[in-house]
Image 1 (cartoon, each protein chain N blue to C red):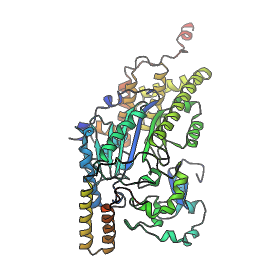
Image 2: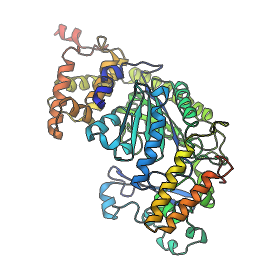
Image 3: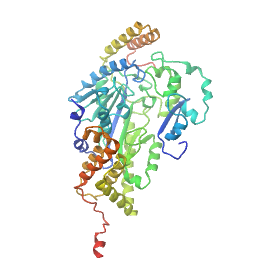
Image 4: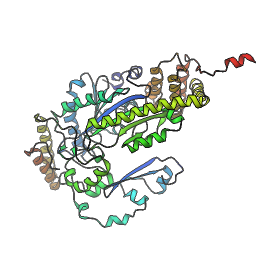
Length: 165
Length: 366
C-alpha cells in the first residue's frame, strides 16, 4: 500500500523483465495517481518510481509480434495476457524468466491430452479459419489473412497437437 | 428452461454434507483449456468468439455428465441471474461480466460447471461440499478427458496446456477450499496462517476469489503455481495445508474457550441479539454475524438448530438471492430492511444461546 491508511481497493499487477510487481492502492491514492486505465501505462513502474524512461530503451525482443495473433511484447507486458497459444513460442524468451519466478518449474509434468483420439472437431476449427480467411480477404485485410493462413497451416501440420514451443 | 427453474432450491444446495464441513464449506478443482491455433477470447473478435463458443458448447452439452443440465449464452442471462450464479460459486465474477460469445453449461446437480470463453476458451470446475479435493479432481478429470477426444486443446510438450495468462499454464489447474475460520480470526492468528500458506505457494483470498474481502470469516485457499508439478502433487499440497488449517482452527477455538470464554460468549450472544432483532442490516454485517452464529452452533450453544439452516441464511441474505426472492429491483436501503425482516422471521424459532456461564442462577439469588 502507498498511503498505508485506507483499505486497498485497486490492485495492479505489472510484469517487468520477467518479474511480477504488485501494487495495492486505496481508491483515493488510485485517483491521485491517475490510475483509471490499468492498461494505459506501465503503472507499477510509475508508482514504484522505477523509471518509465527504461521504456524507451527497447530491446529487440519488444519489437517482435506474434505471427498468429499480432500481439506485441509491449502488449503482453501491459496486460499480462497472451493473445493465442502460438504466443508461447513467439515470446519464449520473455516467458521463460517469468515462468521460473511464478511456478515450481518451467517444464510441464502433469496430464497430457489423450493420445490416439484424433479430435473430430479439428475439421470444425478448420472450417472456422477458412471462413475467417475468406472474410479477411473480402475486406482486403491481407495482414490478417496472412496470419489466418499461417494458423490453417499450423492446424493442418503433421506434427499433431504438439506445438513447437 | 429458465435459470431459477433449474437451480436447486437454496435449502437443497446447502443441505449437502461432506467430510469436515464444519470448517470446509466446499472444495473445488478448476481446469483451464484452450483450442489449438485459436485466438484467446480477449484477443478474438466478437463474431469469432460466438463461433468458437458454439463449437465448444455443442461438445460440452453432449457429455453424459451434462444430461438434463443447463446451458445458456451469457447475454441471455439477466444481471440478477448472473449474480445469483456468482453467489452460488457456479461462475466467476469475471464471467458474470461477459455477454454474447460466452456461455455456461451446468450439470443437473450443479456440481459440474463449464464456463465457455471466460479468460480462456474453457474453464471447467467440479464443486463438492466439505473436504473432497480428490473426488472433485476425479470428476473434472473425466470431463477433461472426454472433451479432449472431441476438442483439439492447445498443448505443448514443454509448457503443457497453454492459457491466456501464464500464471495458469501447464496443468491449468486451480485447487481450492472455502474455509470458515472464526476461531483463528478471533484469536488473531489468521495473518500468521495466511503468511504460512503464502510461503508454501498458496493464495488465501476472500469469499469470491481474487481481490475480494474475507467476509464472514470465510477464506478461499488455493494453489498459485500450475507448472512443474503434476495435478496430484498440487492436490496433495493443498490438501495438506488445508488439513493443517483445520487443526489450527480447532486448537484456536479450544484455546479461546479456555483462556477467554467471555469474549467468545459476548461475540456470539451479540450476534444472536442483532440477527434476531434488527430492522435494517447490510449484507456485510449479516455475513459477519452469521459467522459468529455458526461458531456458536459448532460450540453447541444452539442445540435446536441445524447447520444447513445457517448456511441457507448465508446464501439467501446475499444481494442477488434477496433481489430474486422479492422479484423486482430493490434499492440498497430496501434490501437491508427486507434482509432484517427475513432474519427476524427465521430467528423466531431459534432459542437464545445456552452458554455454560449463563447468569440465570445468579439472578435467582438477588
